[in-house]
Structures are given as C-alpha cells and as structure tokens.
Length: 111
Figure 1 (cartoon, helix red, strand yellow):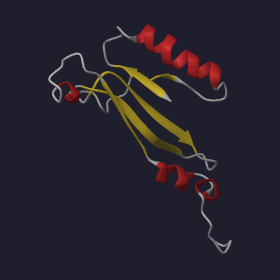
Figure 2 (figure 1 turned 180 degrees about the vertical axis):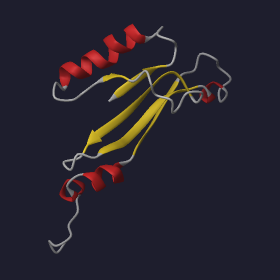
Figure 3 (figure 1 turned 45 degrees about the vertical axis):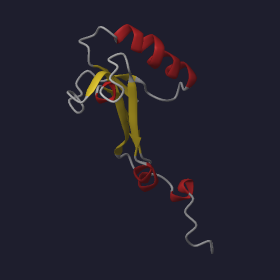
Figure 4 (figure 1 turned 120 degrees about the vertical axis):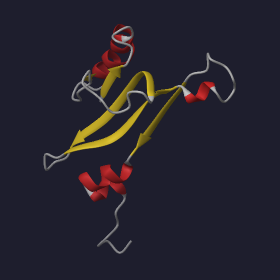
C-alpha cells in the first residue's frame, strides 16, 4: 500500500505515524510506503490518498484499490468542516491475478 501526501509534506509525519507505521508493525511482510511521484488523483483527492497494489504469483503488478479524501462532500451538508474518505477495490482484479479458488470458484467441482 502506498500513501501520497497531497499537502506538500504538511501531513507527512501524521501519515507516517498514524497510517504507515502501524500497518508496517501489524503486517511486517507487506510493503507500506509513501508514493511522492503519484500523479493520478491529484486535483480530485484532497490532503492524502492511497493505492493498494499486489504482485501475482506470476510476477505481474496489479492495481487493486484506490482512495482518498474528497472535497465534494462539504457541498452536501453545506459544512466546510465535513470530511469524507472514499475508496474502491477491484475484487475481480484480485480473482484474475490470484488463485481462482481464493475467490470461491467452483468450476470442476460440480458446484
């Protein structure tokens, strides 16, 4: 998982201590890092965004999910203090790239 600070570094320490460090401790075999070169989502996401990627057993790099804070939620209640973190996850990409049995595929088993 990667995190991008979209505030020119103002939230970097908070993101490291509150997001990356706890995930790194909880899942030591998984990579968690900043992605300062990310271009997608700039102008749409505000303050911070994230991406979830995985490497398949065949060595292919897959983008599985994405998300971040958006500003359009402040227009709904008319409250500039409103915050909304949205995300999307492509489960079909996970099933395509990894064992179909992990996704409940019953082909060939009579199910």
